[in-house]
Amino acid sequence: MKLNIEGKVNVYYVQTLCMIFYPGEKFSEDQEIAPDTPVLDLHVQENDQGYVVDATLTQGSKTASTQKVYGWREDIDKDRLLKLALGDALLV
Image 1 (cartoon, rainbow, N blue to C red):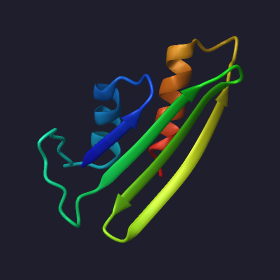
Image 2: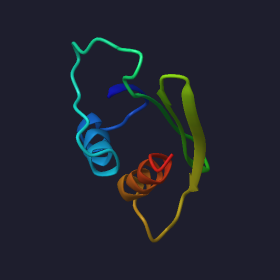
Image 3: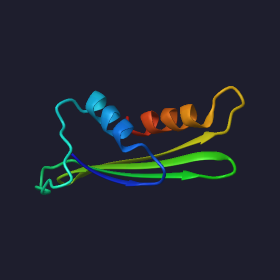
């Protein structure tokens, strides 16, 4: 799996989520993209209202996209909220 990540995100956390949701996937910076290689484009933005996570998963000619918006909450710290938003978005 090829990861394209924009935003302040722990890459290893995203890789761990991918291994849970997409078992057997491997990650390599030097990986050549074959026509059947899954590609995950992840864009994370923090604003005044919370986090906006856009995720697009492409494999061959198939594509699935989602956008998740998680507003700030007093009962959840920023790091936990980001993890929830990422996990939700990766259920593409």
